[in-house]
Length: 222
Ligand code: 4G3
Image 1: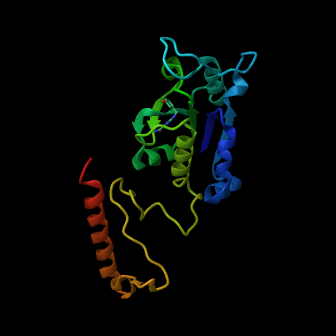
Image 2: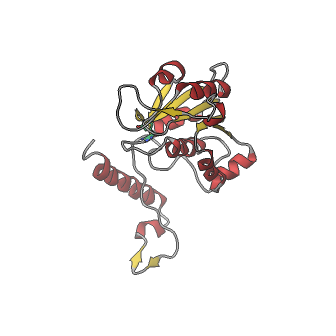
């Protein structure tokens, strides 16, 4: 899997060299390519934004650098080209798993008030949002997408972690609480059942905890 990222802030992706994601990139288990949109501007000052037609606050990213950068990243339009935007379809764990099966993803990041609508019409396949809040650019949203997708690429997670028994592994059920040593900490004890050695009882306790938590936190309001 290759992920191409189009951005005005390439340094933000240095964060990918940390932790388990950094190790997977080193191993070559997947690949992230960063393209600086500014490098594709044909303007004499490498400008990539301009005032909005019709007036209003803020700036809009101009089409030429974006179109040329997208074309450079994905010349034959073989990739899934995603634009990160607060107006996008909400990212879910189900969508994360689908994305992880693709060969090439292009993440297009807008800044300011977003990008010229004609780029979305001409060059973009999907508009995605990581949640109902606004960021100063799509880059933090892209980092979230890369991290969430990478976890499903074989060889990224070590044997210590897994995508099977976690929150949302089925798309909706929240995970049961976890405990490790010591058996008592600051007066709080580990639930007796977990040290009982009764695997059937442990399984039932975890299932009940998951269901209670999901009812409390996910079924009350939609
Ligand atoms: C387009 C994505 C892009 C229009 C991007 C702002 C939040 C998300 C941007 C716009 C973003 C998200 C850049 N903020 N919720 N900021 O996924 O108004």
